[in-house]
Image 1 (tube, rainbow, N blue to C red):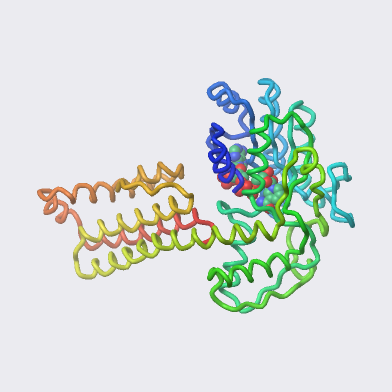
Image 2 (cartoon, rainbow, N blue to C red):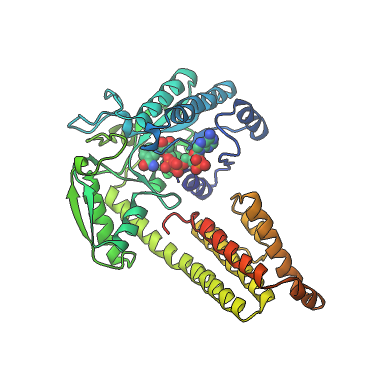
Length: 406
Ligand SMILES: NC(=O)c1ccc[n+]([C@@H]2O[C@H](COP(=O)([O-])OP(=O)(O)OC[C@H]3O[C@@H](n4cnc5c(N)ncnc54)[C@H](OP(=O)(O)O)[C@@H]3O)[C@@H](O)[C@H]2O)c1
């Protein structure tokens, strides 16, 4: 979520960058080292993390290896290359008993595995990399990842009432604001290394946050029906991991030392919901067409037009892929080759899906040459056509997962 938002911010500032995801694992020191050799970076920014707060309670080793050991690996690269590293941490390093906004010196005391593993990552970074920025943030939401805003909008559209925790206080952070802060630090070449707190200005409970999402969601047509947003206590909504009751971060240091203007959380939410509304209408256009094609393909199977079933399945998948281009604010290519389209998004289909997409593309392209149509039509039959439909539905579901608000 933050990584993709950061790419957008760096592009806007015309800062040259190279981004990676799991293909260069932070758990693999050699891969990191050769990546460093290849790109010779001036800065390292680590947006990767193990972020599944509840799952971390059962997957302690995975959480520590990514959030502590992976960070240590990156820190070593930064130190060897004598370059600064920016790392993101969390308000969950605190125990939640404070009654006033937490500054960077406030005592830590995580109440769950995720917070403890993130704290261990901070400690490794401080020990290994002399030129480090640690930015602790909280309640992050943004366009590119599953997050509280998307979850709420989905729930509000499907239920008459929902309960939201009202006894945890903090403040939400729009990933774009955080990405802008990171870009500003790099742009200014800041050497004011250290730990900083950053979240939206102001404070609220999750319940108040949900109330504002509902109000704006209704105003912008994203929430289609009425829904009662009822407060509840953390006790009424038990989760595997405990969360801090109070984790409001003080932004005093980031504004005074880095001179960064911290936006109010509710102003940022308004901007986000505006974007979400625009995005929704552009993306849904492609999705509607993809679904229409799929329905058409089903109808064609029953009338025995098998070649056209396969062409229409191809078109349906193509439109779904284009919805993802739209969702990621990328210009939508005019090509029809499914594998090349997917390649442009850097998403990896499994081997079966890959073969299926290749087959579909083959029929699609071949069907455009008249002399091959009759031969292809002979190859296709009802059974194969039904297989096409089943597989297409599966691929469309897989692609839909790439648009986290759906
Ligand atoms: N989300 C919040 O509410 C929140 C609040 C406070 C602080 N933070 C911190 O903010 C930062 C950004 O969070 P986010 O919400 O943007 O996280 P996110 O969407 O979960 O992204 C984390 C990314 O790290 C990748 N990753 C996991 N293990 C990796 C590995 N070994 N090598 C390379 N990449 C790996 C993940 O890949 P996969 O998807 O394949 O696993 C994922 O793409 C994190 O440091 C997080 O702890 C988040």
